[in-house]
Amino acid sequence: MSLIVAARFQTFDQATVAAQKLFAEGFTEDDVHTFYINSAGEHGRYPLGGDRLADPDSKGGHVGAVAGAAVMGLVFALLGGLIASRLASSIFIAIAAAGVGAYLGALAGALWIIGRNKRRAANTPRAQEPHPAVRPAGVMLALHVAPGQDALARRVLRESGGRDIERAQGRWQAGKWEDFDPLKPPHPVEETSTMS
View 1 (cartoon, rainbow, N blue to C red):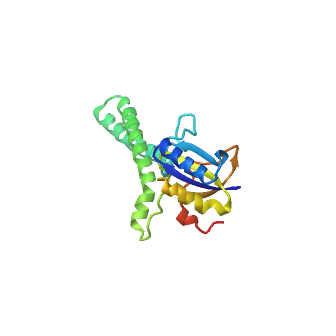
View 2 (view 1 turned 120 degrees about the vertical axis):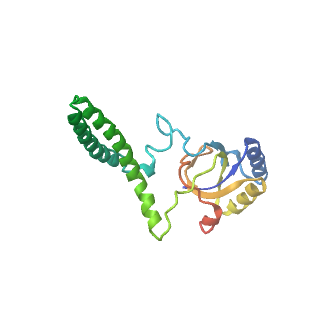
View 3 (view 1 turned 45 degrees about the vertical axis):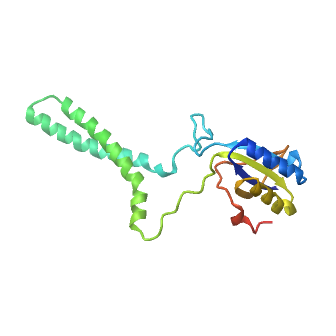
């Protein structure tokens, strides 16, 4: 694992100026990797797009949909059957009512299950756990550094206009940060200043 210092820039031109300043300080071209980070949700990890297979907040929604469809479908079918028998009408009313009930029940059941965690968190005194931090979109300049060079690298990046400066441990091969994961929350320098 290699020590990597990285910063986010607004444009590739700004990152290029920072890279030139790093070269003047003795870093080589093999130590610098510049690339673009897309906005959260736009990393295209799945064939249909997106970063995740499913939204983590939708957990259990399918169970609520099935339960709601069964309960509401049965209730509406019974009501439709009652109306059909009173009006001496066809069984089609009961079937249509069951379909409408199943549809409305599936929607209501899924929403009830999905919103349950938020309702539970609102009723408890402890604060709800926030979602992990996401990396903002922008140009990332990653720099492979030796342990004694990280302070110099951070200073040059900061003076060049770099934002969200972080330190990380990663696999650096052929002048690139090979195992960079845009979904992994960043670790700003302030949080990792005790790393060595």
